[in-house]
Picture 1 (cartoon, helix red, strand yellow):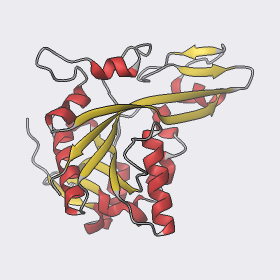
Picture 2: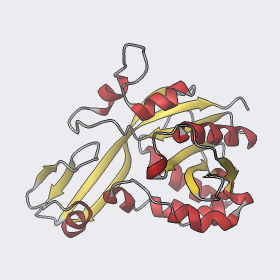
Picture 3: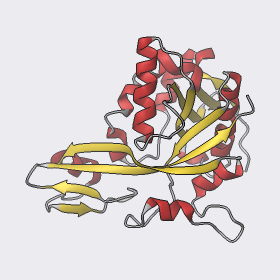
Picture 4: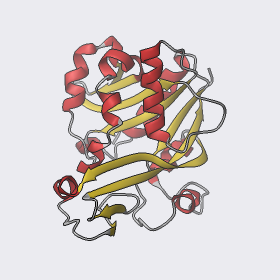
Length: 247
């Protein structure tokens, strides 16, 4: 089923800021506690609204959001700390009045009851078109492969796996490749989420009572737990995908 929606830039409709952040999300709780993420989402309305796209149904309800960030790219190499890097670099550029020379996707979120309707692909297309309108020749994306269910499989191996038709086995990577994206590299520490053991217990419902790797549902790699230090750290690898925009 193709959902009928209109897609707008948040800067043109600042009144949608509330509904955007009130939209239900399917992200696991621990993913909401990346310390770098707050730097972006806390500044979206004031600094990055021209790079946020909002999809609404005919009744005005928000059903999908696509977040991106302009940043300063240093050379041609894609940073190993993908998601965290583009957010930090984008905020520094905004604070210091620097001219961004690149733009990266941050997140595409679809309301849970509208997932599986093709909205994610449409939001990706809209994000690429928005990047082109703003003069960027490429849209970069540190992609979180949401189909990876073996936390012990190295990300480079998983990202390289393809079906018989040559498309990635991962559903979200497949959306990007079908849209013309090119898988370029792995960002091995794209997102780092530290927390006390009490915090990780609250986020996951797991005991976190032994030192060593902990398998957490919907995590892409094990969480590193240290009972002696009363902390655990999740280091998530993502996959760099590059889209040409035609700009």
